[in-house]
Every structure is written in C-alpha cells, then in structure tokens.
Image (cartoon, rainbow, N blue to C red; front, top):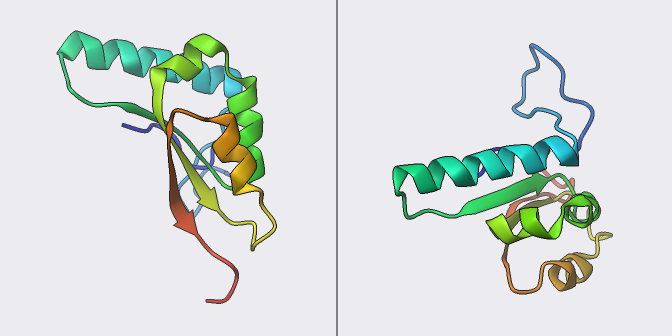
Length: 111
C-alpha cells in the first residue's frame, strides 16, 4: 500500500487537474508509521511502499531523510522516472539495497 504521489514536489495546488499532494519527509515518515500500524492491527498481509517521488534524485533525498526505523517499515520503494535520462537510478538502487525498487511511471518528454 502506498499513500503518496510525488509528495516532495511543490507544484500541487487545490483544485488542480492532476493527482498529487505535497508532504515533507517528516510527515511522510509519520504516515508510513501510521499505515504500518493500521495494517498490523487489521492483520493484513500487505507491504508498505513509498514514496513515488517524481525523480530518482527526489527519491534519494526522501530516502536519506528517513530514519532507519521508517526505512525498516518500507518494503518497496516506488519512483517515477521523469528525468529524461539524467537521473541516477543506480544510486537510488544502491541507497535502498535490500528493498524492492519499482519504476511506477516513466516519461522522456516524447509524447
């Protein structure tokens, strides 16, 4: 289960035509902890994923801002790939070693 979509991006505004909502990493960590607690209380067999940042660089910054405790609650790191070939997905992979890494959206400005 993932609660976010491009949360570090600051362009999300009320009444927008696209999905998304800004959350700083400390708030994301609170939500991840609450989500994990609710999953366990309900006895669900699902994992927590985070954070579906817009770019690999944003995903790295968010991951690095999380505490070890928060990182331990996350089973899968989702990320969008909107860096048109300039992002360092390999560095993100190294940062989240041991976690599943999923590129949930990708675009290179050709559509």
